[in-house]
Length: 226
Image 1 (tube, rainbow, N blue to C red):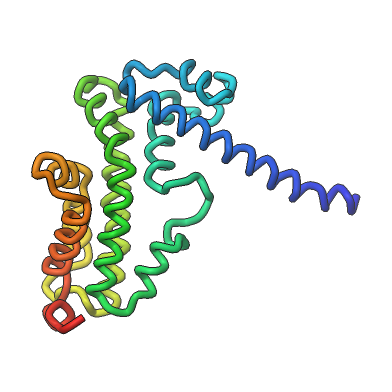
Image 2: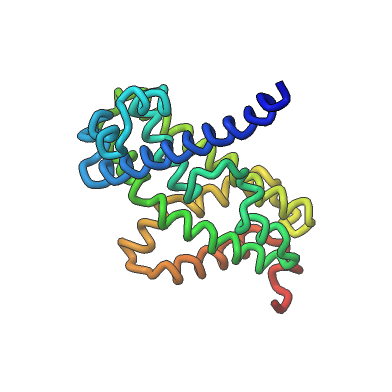
């Protein structure tokens, strides 16, 4: 009995590790196919074949079918990996939280946002194009709506953090600050500035830092030397 109890956590950890590796393989295969062929022309069977898994395994990992697969691709691309680590515990986020200076804090945030936008841009563009071409695809429409809701919800973290520090403009409620962060860090803005306007990513990051600083921070924090 004692030996059985010792084995169970180990077996559970191995199963979890295997499931994570499988999800990563599926997400990688699906992302490559969707970017090269488009969402509509990518089939679940093709993804399963490219990932080296059974079709049933694919549906087990993505029980919502193709829209759920698209969300898996988006989530893993956004995070950069499939590790079960909360966003607040990731090193880049901890560095932002631990930075005492609000301007440098926003500079770190802008750098993190730029790296995320670089990764997510091709996936987001494919999903937007597919949703525009298939407005009756309720599953895909729900995925995109959910992504936007999650982005807005995620923007509350930095807004509330600045508010708690007393660094947010006194006339700017955290909810309104979150809305501005959400808009400024949109994939569409990143695309327009780096593609249409032909800015470098470094120029985008510098602009985002300056704009977030001017928009969000109380002047005493914004204007002091750094």
